[in-house]
Length: 92
Image (cartoon, rainbow, N blue to C red; front, side):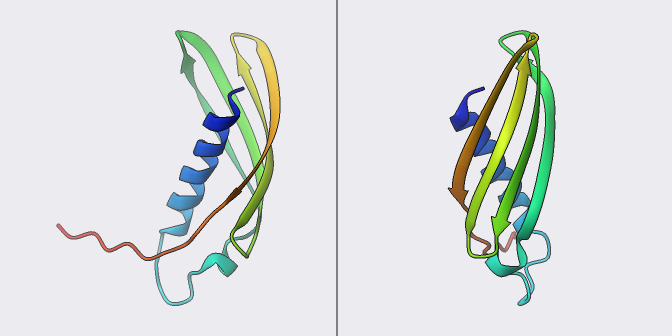
């Protein structure tokens, strides 16, 4: 499994999760605990699936593990990262 791809997937997931209701009570501190995600698709035409589990510490830091199967070949990895919850205003 490509560790950069795994890290990017977690970053995107954390960003989407953190931008739900951007009220005053939403902050890095509210993203706290163990989360997971699943993914499936194709890599280079081969079937691929990912399982990712990560822990957010409420202070902007992530740690986690992931497992990938691409065309029956299993790969595992660990990662660390950071996150930041901020308000985004979208205008039509």
